[in-house]
Length: 338
Image (cartoon, rainbow, N blue to C red; front, top):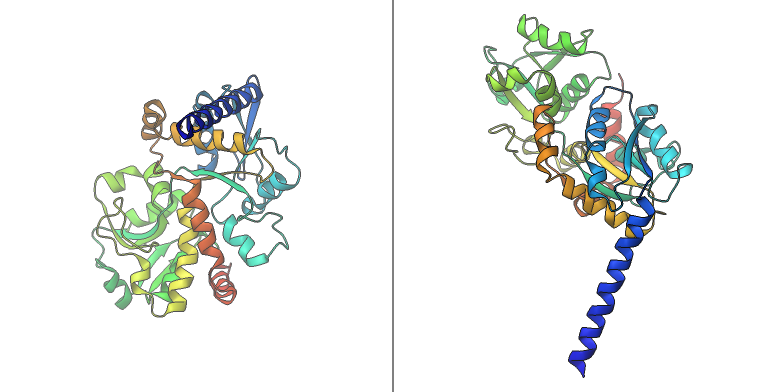
């Protein structure tokens, strides 16, 4: 009798699952699904989303058409605020926020950010971003220890650029002697290194791979430090920043900045989207990450693909909120525009 009851329960569960899948397919069939990108056309987030849009639909039940809409403003906050306050909440609108949007809410506690990263439905993350500093191969600086003893000239675009911010972070928390030379365009930053006007710069690894792959492929640079808590295969032998933290507070500050990188290319839904559609979008996202055609195109475009699912993302977000508020404020003071 118990055996029959178990079989009946399994059969009912199977029918319910099948009905749910069919319901999701019926909902999405013939519809447009919009990916809202928090930046302008042509940037990294836009490029990733437009590439995903060409493949994602074939893995979603009902095979909807995927379109991309750019909504730049306030470093991604404009888009994220719109997503949670005004966009349809039926699973037809997906957000592509900046990774830093998570830490921004921790700081302002809802004054500008109208979303809570702990309450939205994360779909997945295409790849982390690894911020690191490098110097040209013939620079007299060969190691991070050298950069702690000698001044290292770093090219940067401006006071609030990634290179300037990271140089300031490492100088304060690690003890390096980076000196930023500002006023270059993004392209000129690399030319300045090649002309030996400066020793190197700080940059996102995936951005450098996409824009200047020859520097990596020809082994023309030496990586000095990685904004991470452990080594990564992409940058073998490059020491992680937390290894050099001088106190527990310094380590926590670095961990907060690291979280912004690990949530590199995230996708998100509002909490109101029905669970069956959320699960369909999550499973279809991870299926796309394994698709040979998608991977072939991303390789051609030199786009990094090292996905994490929603569980890993939720764990990272929770970790950010465990960092004491005093440490959060101190970190953001360190990274704000000078």
